[in-house]
Image 1 (cartoon, rainbow, N blue to C red):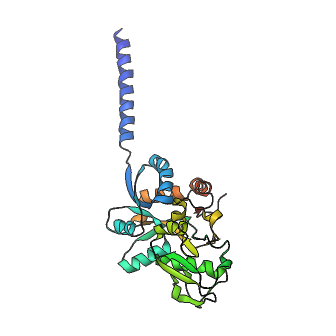
Image 2 (image 1 turned 180 degrees about the vertical axis):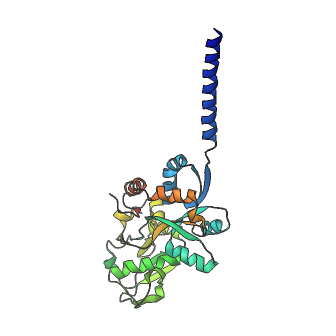
Image 3 (image 1 turned 90 degrees about the vertical axis):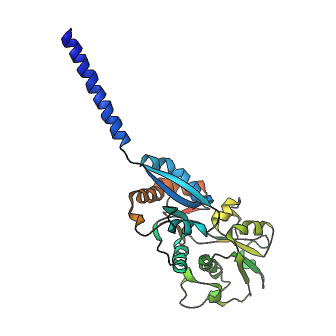
Length: 276
C-alpha cells in the first residue's frame, strides 16, 4: 500500500512539474507591440486584416489612424510610432529632403492607382480647350498625374524629366490649354468631384474608395499597373531590421494577403505582387 502511494505521488509530482514547465515556457514567449500609423482606407483596413496572423507570430499591432499626409511621418520621426503605412517612395524621399529626415522604406505592399473622374466628359480625350483639371496639393503625386495626361496625348513633358519628381512647370506643350489647379487638400477631392466642380478631378484611390467611388468603374482614366508609386511600410533608419518589422512586412507581402487585397478592393487597390 505504501509503495502504491509513493508511486502515485511520484506520478502526480512529475505531472505537476511538466505542467509547470509548459506554463513557464508559454509565459516566457515574448510579445512585441508595434505602434503603426496608417490612413483609414485602405491601410488601416489591411493592417486589421493581418493583425490576428501577426499575433500568432508574437506581434501585437497598435494602429493609429491619420486623416492627412502631414502627421504620420512627424509622429514616426519623433518616436511616437514604430512604423507607418500610407505613402509611396517619392513622397517619402521628398519628405526626407524637406525635413532633413532619415526615414526608410521597409517594403512595398500595394498600389493605389490615382484616377481622373468627371461629370462633364466620358473620356479624357473629350476634354475641351481651356478645361479645368482639379488636383491635390500633394506635390509627389504631380508626376503620376502628368503621366496620365501624357499617355492620353494631351500634353508633352520636357526632355529628361524624371517623372517621379515632375511638376506642372515641366509641361512642354499643352495644345488644349488645360488648366491644372493644384491647391486642394487630397481628402477634399471626392466632395469637389461630387459637387461637379471643374471639368475633371484627379483623386487618390484611398480617398476615392473611402468616399464610395470605384476608380476602376467610375473614372475616365487611371494610372497604369507598372507605376512606381507603390505604398510602403516606412520606419526609422535601422528599424527595418527589427524582427517585428520584418514579420509585419512578410505577412503583408505574403501571397495570401496580396490575394485578399486584390479581391477585397476589386482592383481599386492593387497588390504589389501580380497575383490572381
